[in-house]
Image (cartoon, rainbow over all chains, first blue to last red):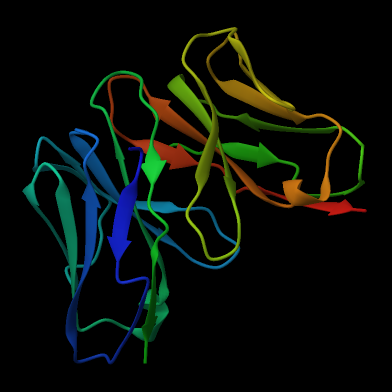
Length: 113
Length: 111
C-alpha cells in the first residue's frame, strides 16, 4: 500500500467559514507534509510534521492551522481564508531518514469565494 | 529557501523523439526525486536518486544524480503521447526534511 488519501477532493467555502482538509497514510511514514499548489506552479511547502511534531512552518498565515493527531493522520484547519488561498492542497508522506521517497495524495481542490 | 532551477520551462516535441531536462542548485542535496503531474492530480514519483553519480532507469526514463550533488537530469527516450504532462524535480537537503521543487517542465508530444 503506497497510498496517501486526501479528503475532500473538492471544497468550496466562504471567507467566514471554518473547514478542514484531511490526509491519511498507512505506510508507517513518520514525516507528513502539506504543500500548496497554484495553477501552472510547483508545489510550495507549507508545513512538515516529524513524529507528530511540527518541524517546519514556512511562515504560513495563521488562518491555516495544521494538526497531526497521530502518525497516520494529518489535518489542515482553514478559517477566514481569502480568495487568493484558492489552490490545490497536497499532502505527502515519507520515511524519516536522510533519504526517502515522498509520496503524494491526489490533492484537495479548494475554492474560496 | 533554497532554489532549484529547472529547465527547460516547456518543450514541444514530436512523438518518438528523446527529451532531456535538468535541475541545478547552489545547495547540496541528499536526494533527488523526479515526478510527473497530470492536470488535477497529485505528483507521481518516477525516479528516486540517493547517491552522487547514481544513474537509474525506469523503463524509457533515465535520471542521474550529479557528482557535485547539486544537479540532476531526467531523460525520456522515444516519447509517446501519454508522456504529456508537467515534470518536476525535487530535492532534499542534507539532514533536513525540507523537500523543495523545481518550477517544472511542461512537455507536449505531437503524434
